[in-house]
Structure formats: C-alpha cells, structure tokens
Image (cartoon, rainbow, N blue to C red; front, side, top):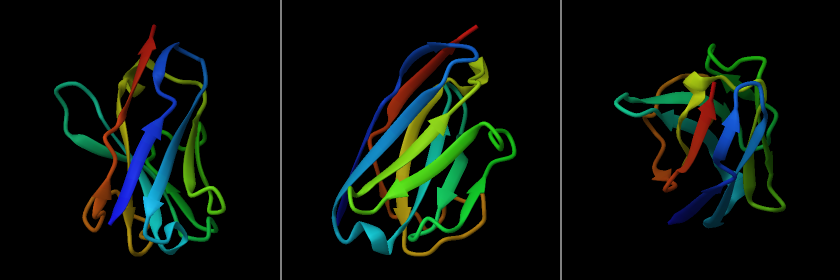
Length: 124
C-alpha cells in the first residue's frame, strides 16, 4: 500500500509559477516511477509528466514540455512538479500516482496508487 498526498496548488495568474509536491508513504518510494496527471472541469484526466525511480528518465506531455519540470527526492519520499509560465488552460486538479515501472507514455494504465489531488487555478 502506498499513500500519496499532494500539496502546493492554489490560485495564480497567467505567467506565474507554482510548485506542486507529492509526499509518499508506505512501500519503498524509490522503487516506483511517479507520474503527474490533471483533470480540468468537464474534461477527462490527462497525462502531464512522469519520472523514473532514479530520476534519470523523464517524459512530458507536449502541452507542458519546456515549461514544467518533474523531479523527485527519494530521501524525502517526495516528487515535485515545477510549473512555469502557467496558462489558464492549466487550470485543473493535479494528481500524482505511482507505477512499478517507467514508461514514456501518456497512458494512465499501470498507475496503481493515486493521491486525492490538489487544485490549481490560473486566472487570465
């Protein structure tokens, strides 16, 4: 069992930055790849970014590439999502999730533990 708790969401203006955190507890955090997903009001959940267990591999959705950075600190059992140059279309609830292996894919398949989400609102 893995418990995930996201934090860091809030209300910002377009162009601002925000850093989300996801704290994990339970099974050994460093054994798992981590992902960030988001779900905007009235839309399906979509992939944002993923990172391998070591942090050596990352993969991003085209819509956030170059503006968002995923990272992890295995000593703190935490994964981060640094979001720069935020746009109103980034408004969503952001979720972190774990999966046993890293894949360079948009899929949410294989992610077996999810957090409750943290809301991000970007005003124009």
